[in-house]
Length: 80
Image (tube, rainbow, N blue to C red; front, side, top):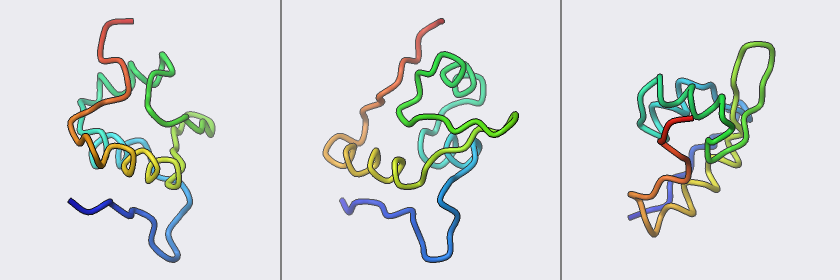
């Protein structure tokens, strides 16, 4: 399996919450926002007003770490 490179030339340095939730984590919207509220996501949240953004560089590092264990999740799915 090849490591995923999500940074393309001319692409923004950050990704939005929906892109991160759907394409990287693959979890429900409810689970995502609950984890964000608890600061339990595997990548730090950049809050700009009400928007949640994520560093593409840090997301790429997360994906590269997961390369050896694609089924692992680094955040807590449990109740708050």
